[in-house]
Length: 186
Image (cartoon, rainbow, N blue to C red):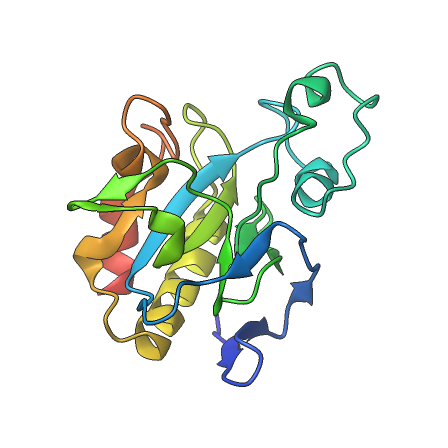
């Protein structure tokens, strides 16, 4: 797969991909460096793939009558910087320079509020179903770009949601192949 992706330094957006602005973001704290990537897994409705629901959820326009589960999450204000669909399509919701609301209550190596200093990347999937190879390839492309753009991101600071919110979150789960990802980003 040829990597034609780039990060626009003026907008902090990945190009050329779809950008759907989410209202669920804000300014990062002054003086905080972006030094971590958090990998997540999401499916809406749970265990189903390919719907518009994840995008609508992040953009605050989810039709809560479309599925019974949606009423449970209707009040949540959640986003991520990127979503990588099972097809490999990448959608951006928040510019990298801004704080996306993806981590929730979290800490890593003694630092709390991981949203302040991380980039959140959602993969369409579940903890128990293997992710698609094209998702890993796209994730690898994005991680390499982010590491160039934010050189303080090191391989040991590419973590799962489960690593920053243990006991509360389990994604991307046991189906995620960390060894494969590490092999393609080194």
